[in-house]
Amino acid sequence: MRATLDFLLHDWLHVESLTARPRFADHSIETFASVLDTCERIAREKFAPFNRLADTEEPRFDGERVHLPQATYAAMAAYVESGMLAAMQDYEHGGMQLPCVVEMAGNAFFSKASVAMGGYAMLTSGNASLLMAHGTPQQVETFAKNEFAGRWFGTMCLSEPQAGSSLSDVATRAVPDGAEFEHDALGPRYRLRGNKMWISGGEHEITENIVHLVLAKIPGPDGKLQPGVKGISLFIVPKWLVHADGTLTGERNDVALAGLNHKLGYRGTTNTLLNFGEGRFKVNGQAGAVGYLVGQPGEGLKCMFHMMNEARIGVGLGAVMLGYAGYEASLDYAKQRPQGRPLSAGGKNSAAPQVAIVEHADIKRMLLAQKAYVEGGLALELYCARLVDEQQTGTPDARVEAGRLLELLTPIAKSWPSEWCLEANSLAIQVHGGYGYTRDFPVEQYWRDNRLNMIHEGTHGIQALDLLGRKVLMDDGQGLRLLATRINGTIAHAGQVRGLAEHGNALARALQHVGAATKAAWASGNPLDALANATPYLQAFGHVVLAWLWLDVALAAQRGLDAGDARGTDFHRGKLAAARYFFRYELPKIDAWLAVVETRDTTCRDTDPDWF
Image (tube, rainbow, N blue to C red; front, side, top):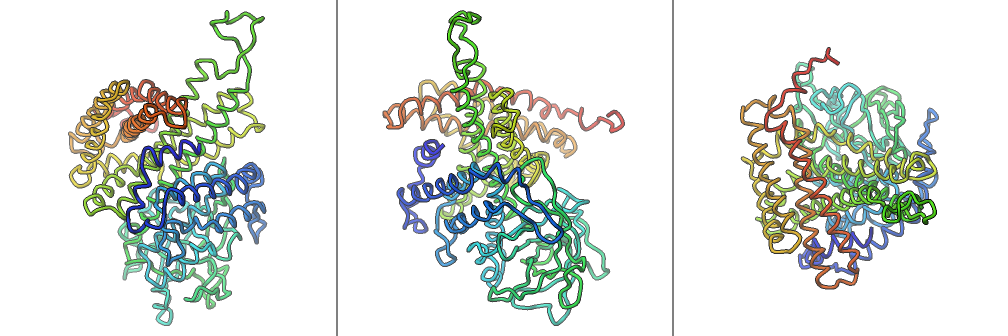
């Protein structure tokens, strides 16, 4: 994996060019490599050996405390010590001022070694980053800095038992906490009552405190909650109450663990149902969890999207690396497992020596598919991270373009790896045969862990509605046109390269098809017509994006091959083979997906529930 990561960072994305920018001037190729070396070592020593342990000894609640394997504490301590929680932050906030793309590359090692154990860090970093963007200076000082330092961990509390993805139905209430507490140093103070479901990292004792970011509605003058998402506000609700200087008051907030959710996979991260304000831990003799308003009332969802979008790219990276882990395991197995004889040797001639299964065409098909999915997915996530760097440090025009592309690609960055790197895990099991279905090999756990990624941080269907219903239409379609311009630039370059022009022509046809389907979907002007087939549209759109990235990566691979790069011809030819596989086996799928979009097919929409 490291060779591919270095290739994508340097030969494809040219991250060393970022060191010419003032923010990253203290860095070099050597410091970037040192960061990756450190992350790779910690992941290898503290995470990977205990991934199975975190799965089999899942979190346990005894009615008072949540128990985790000691290895989880040691792994998170090592992660905190590495400084990666604040890797992108300013020096003054304890950060390293690393480019986002390098931070993501470093975190890839942890996601691959044990995505569940690393989940606490992803949530904490996103939580603190939201506060950096939307919190008051005091909230940053008290909460964000302590999270970046690893003293406290954080969560995001959106979903409720009766309202999963439907945030407009959030029923958690927040009322002002009386005149004497209404405005203290940490911001306007409220009392929250309600329940939050599926809260990862919601209870543990890895750190001394947990900072919950909670969506809730402030009642109007009539005491009623405003319907829809416009009434949602955002609150900081710490597990233990704190003074403004960051010291704990010693008083437990009215946040109680109602129970743990027992999951198919991803078991190393606690997943909880939390009760806010049930009165188990009364503050000043009153029930109600104390929370501090972040931003303005009614703008909670706007603030939370800062963390949600960051989390969606993190989910995509986690899906990629689980797929990558399965790919490497199945490749190793295929090279060692003897079975069958080549057709060229008579096929059924039992006297002929067996060959490793990697010699069989169908095994190569499954390995190529995995390679295309996971390496393409890694390119996607790194490209999105590179857009973040451009958005933060580029020229004014480059910032605008990066922002538009990132908005458009975020649903793809979350959904595409969640679907296709899960398929890679399924193929890894298949390569192992019956052994893959046993717990003697790790590939079954990789599949179980990865199955969550199509669900959390916005299901596949939610991402599809976001893409076709909002993102491709934003700013009168400027983001879509910008993406098409980038894709056409790659197609033009490929047209000058022997062996890649064919792929460029195929991509041009696919891009045109997506554009036509987008117009056809909205031709009636009725959202019910357009969005009934949003998920096939998402799948087709994602495959076109990945075909573009694979073509761009293939151009870099061809340059390396022509230049006699020290990594060798096998390395570069492997990249070209994966690109060829994607164009010949995967890209043709989009025609079937887009057919129902273009015709605004009503099969699914018009099916009566009673027919099931």
